[in-house]
Picture 1 (cartoon, rainbow, N blue to C red):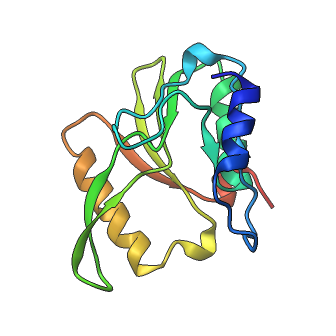
Picture 2 (cartoon, rainbow, N blue to C red):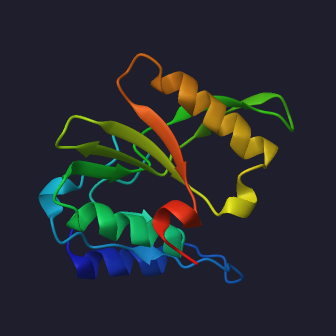
Length: 149
């Protein structure tokens, strides 16, 4: 999708006017490295959407890093039990990255102050279990790993 089409799509999307996080679409410079979500419910054919400045920084890093073979955002859902209602929900990790050396990572990007939230911990536990035996490592990246602050 072209940048102008993505911007028109973005303007049509409902936005929380009170959101304190930077949001928008990132136009990869190395389009061949970006892989779109595989889940049919995700919007295919659009540019990757970021929901924070942390996610934007990560997308730029993946796009420009010569060691990254491919990357994608919210690649697929992982079921998890939400501790506040004991119901099964779907968790979409923020990113997946495959490096040219064969390493694969499923990544969540969160501010450090959100890393002890029980709902986030339940999601991440489900992601770790999902990754077992799949040659994928699950990691949470905070300001520290992203070089922010």
